[in-house]
Length: 406
Image 1 (tube, rainbow, N blue to C red):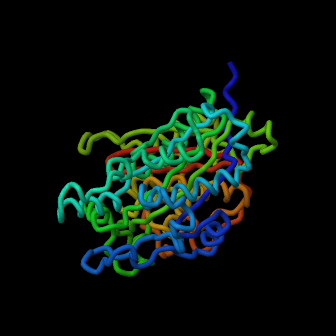
Image 2: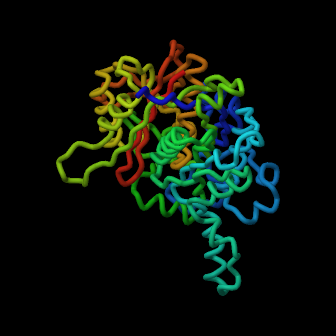
């Protein structure tokens, strides 16, 4: 039996700290223009972390139907806007696709944190009658998937992946499965938004956030001064279609093809077994039917935690050899967007494949000794690009890899 045709990504919608819209984001990435600044959604003065990646100029009233604003969280507002943009970008006529052949799969790390804090504050300060009815659904991880499905009348299989940063690739991997099982069009990707007191406190509990006060020196994956990462909000929503459906309406291969995917989970600490990233990357390549020499760029997870950076660098060099493939982590411009971070990396990788340009990892001065990777720094690097490998890891051991083709 022949291998199934790789599905294609025909639409991108981006709401990220680097800008709203594909071209705004891409321009910022190439220019190394950071979207990280002092947190504005609340006063962070009493917190050890005071900077984050924030979506510039986003107003829910201009991007979300008014009745949905009060019913949903900021994280869902960002996804609704990005979803609308992705569908418009794809050019798909949804009225021509049977409702049960359209699906939605998104990723979320924390759900509607800000909405939940507001309603819980009303409860603690007053009484249960002060809590709005939408608290029961707006905080839930699947709220974004549900709202996108309802808004666009997509009644096929729907779901959500809650695997922190890795969940963004897992959502796209699940979207690919759905296409193989008969869905013609799947809205996928994800956003996150936990820039509220409760959300930041929860993130601080991991011990992985950088407390360096200079926003350009706080998040430095693979750098000798790496000290953790900064958080961020936003992400990307993508439209994934079967190659046949896209071809029938003249969309061709769109931005690119999803060729391979794999997921793994780290063993328990102290077990002595190797972490999962290397084998996950190798399984994704095998799933794509490609050799390491076929990969032209790796979009790294880039935790910024020194032990994680070394583990990732060791995995990359084990698969590709020392300096065997250019590596980049443009998320230094946005912070880690959790459920939205990996979809944004996929969107950026697709744009890199389209333009033949590898964006650089901004703010890096000195690579940590002994890492052995060819990290692209200083300026973008122009190269003929065919295939990209995107890596993602989530707190707790989640690990995923996705192979994209031009």
